[in-house]
Length: 144
Image 1 (cartoon, one colour):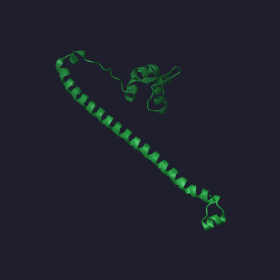
Image 2 (image 1 turned 90 degrees about the horizontal axis):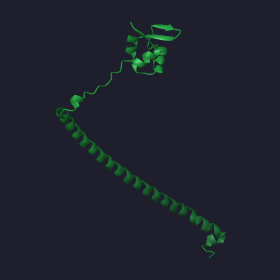
Image 3 (image 1 turned 180 degrees about the vertical axis):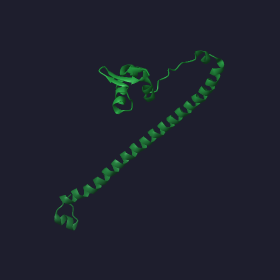
Image 4 (image 1 turned 60 degrees about the vertical axis):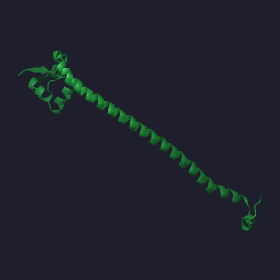
């Protein structure tokens, strides 16, 4: 049973020291011993909570072979076509959105103009009638 410090454990697990500390305090990660210098954590317990990160290795000899590239090229060709189709769809949708936005702006402007005309009609005659006197309104005479 190998034990490591919190700092070394964080380094081995590929996480920050704060993450290990939070796991210890919450009880998710148990420690073997608490000393004046800090916690001693069992490596098996550490790797139970934080599985070790495996480094990705690239096999360059395989990627240089034409057989491996042929399948990749076929797949990438299909993916390229799919990307092109998706871009075309995106452009079409952008065109539709801009057209709808223009229509909305135009109808909003027309609505405002119609509303202004209605307000003008509603307020216009009252102002003219209020200038005439009682007998003028009664007998239909105008002061003009």
